[in-house]
Image 1 (spheres, rainbow, N blue to C red):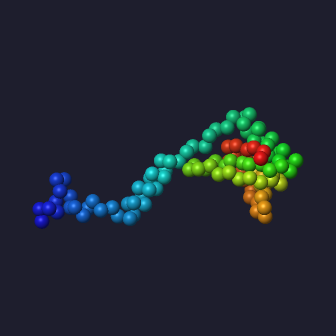
Image 2 (image 1 turned 90 degrees about the horizontal axis):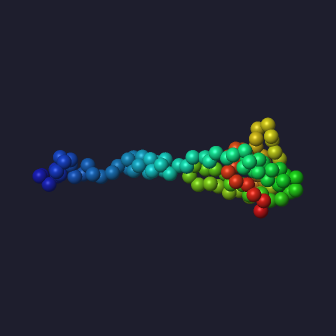
Image 3 (image 1 turned 120 degrees about the vertical axis):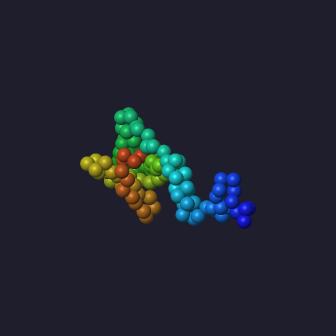
Length: 111
């Protein structure tokens, strides 16, 4: 029975990690990997808006990079509509489309 107690007085079996503790540790590690959204200056915002407008007018494919706290996401398609009052636009590719908030974009360029 003396083997069951370690130098710190804890039972050996108490070193086992419960599944609910593992989930909390992974969640905490994921929280530390979060990134902050970069603050874009006025010139960069204007460049993004002009690229979106060019795609709408000229029907050229545009790629937008959307900010995500863990990993940025790239979408490529054609801008088919822009709502300036709500600062969002409709990006269409193949048979799918998505409304995207302009403020979530960190980069936009013509393909």
